[in-house]
Length: 143
Length: 212
Image (cartoon, rainbow over all chains, first blue to last red; front, side, top):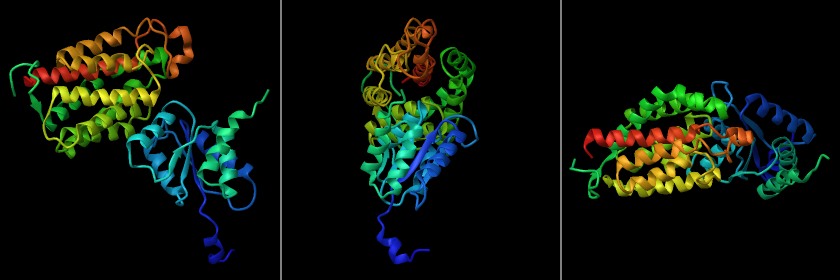
């Protein structure tokens, strides 16, 4: 256990929300990112997958709940899969006041971006650094 | 309530838009199976059920807490659609109504022309959100001509939206899930354009029933 004085000296981490049409996909990608991000203190990351009744789709309520839960005041990076997940987050950012201050849609591949974002946020990167690391995952070619 | 739909000084209040959205909910409920059938041809077969849930929630919210101004009716409805629909049509229709509501501001009474202008701002926001244009086989193929028609009359808006929706049949989808189908999307009417036509048919019906 660290002393509280030491903890308060560490800058607040960026929070990460993983938005997928599927609750299982969002939860599994969060678990994967936590596992691959390695030891040490991890930045907060939460899944927001599917609809509240367990179906496939996008729920603005689940997204906003998760965003509030991971918000430590340093911004929240939202990674999304496709279609309504992208449009819902964009619509909330453009028109609404439901998301916390400093919430940002990050343009990134969902799985690779989630890992890059969590590693960067856990290392103390700010929101720009987290977003850049997640987006850079697009450049990693597999063939 | 005045004489004709070409009377540009005719105004309406929040109640008219609440009744419009209630009429939309009825029409969507009646046409839900057809919307889902269209969506099963080129989409993921949830458009009817999604919109039915969304507009039922809108009607309930507006009935429980009736907003005081036309603008507040639309922003409340838009917020409700974004939070309850679950598919892409939620943020799209939600943005349409929310942006239109903001454009109407705090006025207690507005004209058809103001509504056309506000919905025009909403349609522009939808286009920006989804990155689609007219001709991409989306809801914009009905919404854009509908808003243009609304500058003339409610009837013209309804007719133009219906015509726009029918005109999506020969188009190849360039946005959304249907675009993955490429040429196989040709020959099907777009579900989003079809539900958009329902919105404006309900507006024309409501205006006609109230003699606006």
